[in-house]
Length: 152
Image (cartoon, rainbow, N blue to C red):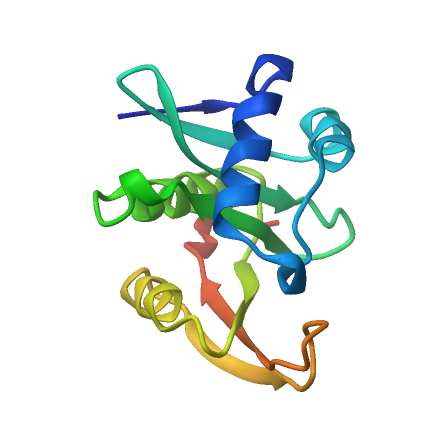
């Protein structure tokens, strides 16, 4: 298992994962979205046996002491193999190295497996976003405090 910064050669695989994992009610990212973020925000992919297994996209939020996980997805064939936790760990490392005090995300309230993973990784629920998704589903807002010794 290897985590690396995404580049243009990963675009096709990123789109395949996005289309497999997210439906139309999940604000799925497009090819153009990924192309934009590759140059602007931290976007990491996890590879297993030279196959892209998953990705995590962070938003820098320059004027904030927090980083936001904008999207994380793991291809179905690689789920339950530690890919999600490794991607989260990479996001924690990046955020700490960049002086952030916390990392936050929102998750569909019905995505119990993701919520379980986030809790295992140290996230706590800090709020609910009512009718957040196009189908009216709620999102849970979660946050993890980071090692503040490196924070600004």
